[in-house]
Amino acid sequence: PSRTVALVGRPNVGKSRLFNRLCGRRLSIVHDMPGVTRDLISAEVRDDYVLLDTGGIGMELEMTPKKIATAAEDQVDFAIRAASVILFVVDVRSGITALDEMVAEKLRRYGKQVLLVANKVDNQEEEADADEFSRLGLGDAYTVSAEHGRGITVLNEAIDEML
Ligand code: GDP
Ligand code: MG
Image (cartoon, rainbow, N blue to C red):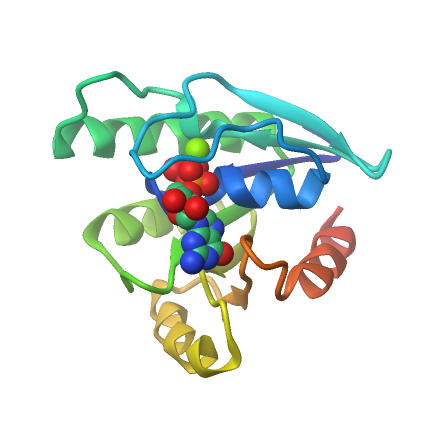
């Protein structure tokens, strides 16, 4: 797991978009429909670390809320074993959900290095909306827009510091 970074988080928060943004290539499928990333995707970033998109682990075609929760747990279990740093991605548009809280609790329990990333902060006005994520108990969220590239430089620096 040394120098391996894994993305975890609910379906649709933008993990695959962020994966592509960080590795600079369109390797992971981005889609409006939850559960589209079927497999584990990995890429080497800046000859520096291996990035994993765990979004497909545990995903099936027909996803009930219960199955989504189980898949999220499987992703976290995998990431805890496989990575030295975990990027926990949340969506500023939806705010904190029950599933976010479940994932956060699990991550806190394991004591892994976690960077909380609030995605879809597409402009300055939306920055403050990310404040609430500190309630997840994983520190303040790094605010990014995977779509537009906002906040990516700062996030990259934070990743480098943890590796
Ligand atoms: P995943 O299921 O977590 O891998 O999410 P995806 O990467 O597939 O993205 C889900 C949806 O969110 C897609 O429609 C993306 O275009 C959209 N999305 C991802 N990142 C951003 C962002 O920074 N801003 C906005 N506005 N939409 C985003
Ligand atoms: Mg995905």
